[in-house]
Image (tube, rainbow, N blue to C red; front, side, top):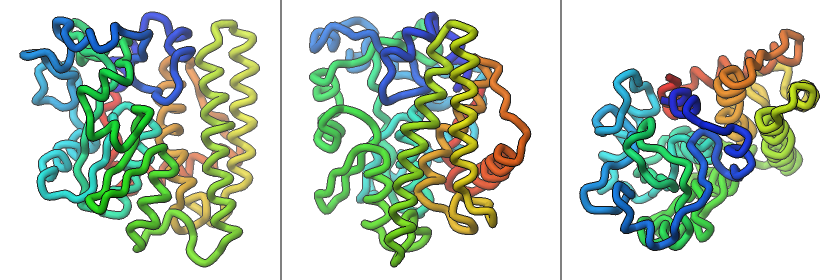
Length: 310
């Protein structure tokens, strides 16, 4: 599902130009405002099909095989009526996956609310399109979601106590403090270490993932080579900041840094390899990152968010 949808992007350059907060879904070039609600085949039209999320959906491609992520989604949707915490998310969004990992790590009783910010076209893989819904249309389709995320971006959470929080790392921190039990994403009683966790979580977003996107956006081979080298340099800078004890960033215990990086490292490997033939170097810094990847990938809460790669 993951790579199949990606492989049907017609123009990867324009795809990433319009991309701001999503990575692995078809991106939008705009649609016809509130009138889109009346378009044939549009999500929200009577009798319209929804974009495929699992094998029971009509638009699911027969070649796709459900993995842990799809099973987690089904489980959490089934528990929706009894859950006090709602997670508004999109399976294809790496930023949303951060929040998803956080609630799984805390072993919370939450409901998974899938938000598809795009029009649905059943002629395309899984029904996913590049036609993003304007905010006013999202308000009509997902009023509770917009109440918890004013800009209409995933992820967000809504607690039964009235709390509403949006933006991925803010949601992770809220989950950590609202549900004050292990595992802790920010170390307790250590203000310097907490600050460092925030610094390196931001580094993932501002340095590693942004340089990776440059590599994917630019169509000039020479510029791609330069962007790849810059990306590798940022990865090495990050690796040198990691605990030598491992396997996680701080050592034996996970933190928000691990949650911040995992969804993007997954895409560095899957999408980078698929579109750019990206292969990670084998030096000591990348061996440390590989050790981290292997450990996080086998951690149940992280693994629970991995959807079908095909």
